[in-house]
Amino acid sequence: VDQNADTISTGRAITMLAAITGNIDVPGGNIIPMKINVRGLSDPALTLVNKLTTEHHQKRLGSKEYPLLSSKASLITPVAHNFTLWQAILTGEPYPVRALFCQGNNMLVSYANTKMVTDAVLSLDFFVVADFFMTPTTDVADIVLPAATWMERDAVTNFHQISYNSAHLQQKTVQLGECWSDFKIMNELGRRLGFGELMFPTDEAYFDFLLEPSGMTFEDFKGVGVISSSLTFKKYEVTGFQTPSGKIQLYDQRLEDLGFDPLPSYREPTESPMSAPEKTKEYPLIITTGGRVPVFRHSELRNIPILREIVPELLMSINPKKAQELGIEEGDSVLVESPRGSMEAKAHLTEAIDPRVVQIPSHWPGRNNVNLIMDNENCAPMIGSAQLRCQLCRVRKKD
Image (cartoon, rainbow, N blue to C red; front, side, top):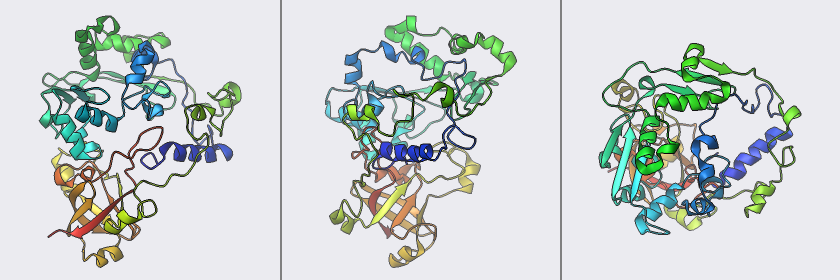
């Protein structure tokens, strides 16, 4: 849903169906996260986003084109748009970007249009990566900082994907080498850049700040382990919704004020048989990426030998009828091509996929990286996500 031609409209349409059918904040249906007495990672008191001036917000790459991602209008902490960042690094427009700090992101594998990303990173004056292991991205870094894994650092965990109504304790069990927690790396970097008065002296001081609304310190929290509130439903009957009217608003005035359609609308993918019939003659198949491989998560865990034994090769899923047309059999090495380039995989024949489509999991390295052939320029409006589920390609048996 969030990697198609119009991410926001699709997401809103799904949410509207839930609202119209009464499936909002009910058992089994779209629970609205509970507020607990712990600061979240997007709390303005922590991100300091409120200290940025209007000029700062306007200079953020992508703020004009993708306001829900990169401008002050973002509902989360606004961030730069990645394609716009690569463009700025390579062209110097709208201003030059000469250094980049990458934290826990294997970007030379994970982002669409690998060639563009690689060219941009290699043209930087200074590139720093903090990660657990060596990766294709750390291989090209000027400096690699060893980051602490979850076993090597304390934490207060209260992310909504983990729990709707609680915060949990994570305690360090081991120290290996010279690894630092992400919190310490960021605080030390901020201090050395001249923002010492805004940084935390220790990780524990940072956790104390997160827990402050609860009246507990991190030392107190160690004895408790969890902070939770009872799960209640239909909270909107008491508090309303976080909209100007306090009601669910199908017509979004905020989007209209930003210059976008206030109601969901359909947008055909930039590359499809309907929108690009001439290109389809050369690249007749639709490629969708990102299908999950159970033993891996994105580019993580690929350094573990037993997991590589379970899934040793990248498999491209293709319908048997289409494979027969192309002279491809189960296990054949195939070349997958798009206007951006080519990549390689092994064929897996399955009736579970439409004859017009091939599916290739993402985040494999080297010539198995599907992002070698994916476009990153034609992005979804408002939010700027790449159309990774709907591009064109052609497939042939590798010579």
